[in-house]
Length: 225
Image (cartoon, rainbow, N blue to C red; front, side, top):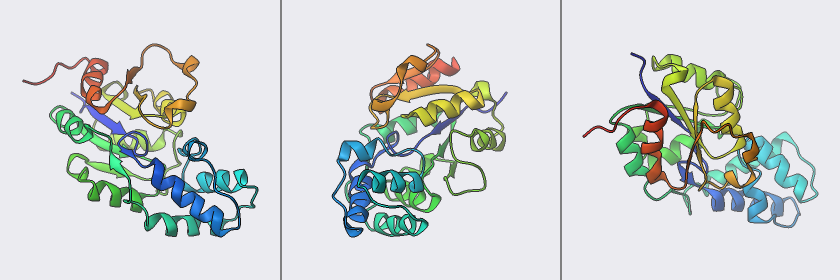
């Protein structure tokens, strides 16, 4: 039987990093001579990796973009990773519950080093078998290659895999890989999701506490007693 695999997005799904990402982007904007960008606007820029976040923030502030800006942003962000970022309430308990039945992985477009630092510091790493960042060997989401790699690595199958995320990027990644999708409506990326794209086969959750039951419904697996 294939292994049951539950793959989580990071920002906006496992952790609430909205404020630290906003403050880091705006620190760069101000350093470059611009005016800070609204927090809600910055939150809508997250999901496609650090380079796209930096490009979007600088463009919104009327500033030019260069590769050096990404390097500088990552330097700034490294100093702010854990100022306000925390797991969403109930997330550790949800991961502990899911881990009774399934292998858990993380697939993020954030670079691996800060992603791993966050998972370690926030004590989520013990639940996670594999983490893939956006700067690895495979293309970033929504390209399905990294997700397919996780499926192969953990001897799973598309039918036995759920991707949990909060953005259009996550939804498209799940669709491109042919896996189940669980969408976190509590995440800061969901507000810009075009719900007309939903097929009815997805699970929608409003808190981490709802994720274990949603995953089991998708995989048609009863809870262990």
